[in-house]
Image (cartoon, rainbow, N blue to C red):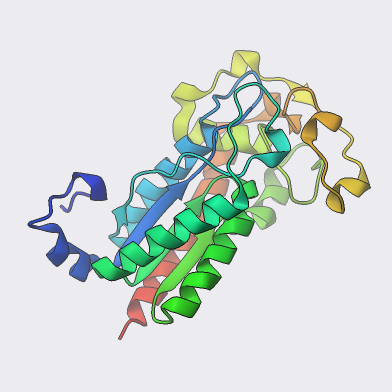
Length: 246
């Protein structure tokens, strides 16, 4: 079986494998506050484990995890490290061009931090203009919104955000239970002002914990539903993209 970890290949053998595989997967996360029960590297852990499972399904290489992300909203919480969208875009464009030059024709960015999505989308657009035959995807738990409605026990505090809450903690229990301390899980239901959708709003204005919901209600079973739904969606999209390669 092929080693899925790209970084552990060697230069003498990797080119032939790239020509066969064609798909590179980049886990992308962040280092940021995730309440008292989850580590700062939560998004990195989730992105990496999702990527490894996805690679098994589609026969792809997993690149080393990109561990830093755009964490503007939580940048002032203890432990958070942020980079600008501009820095992230440029970094991703450089990585993407390098992958294309090596022979990859499909690149899936598996993102576990919502704050990165703007940069990922912009980087993909720049690369599309440079390399029209390079298929680039930026995934963030596809299908999650639909299945979350059926498993969530508490009302969402926001239409888009979920963070260190019932849902993300459930995903951690399913993918990385060893990093999840449910004895420290808390319930924090902040009131997020409507204006936060239309003006820059640091999260400390509405939460002191960085938890957006009831993490005590998290279960491994809920996490399984979310993760397996996302994996099937991503795998289907990548298989079809590979079938379409000339």
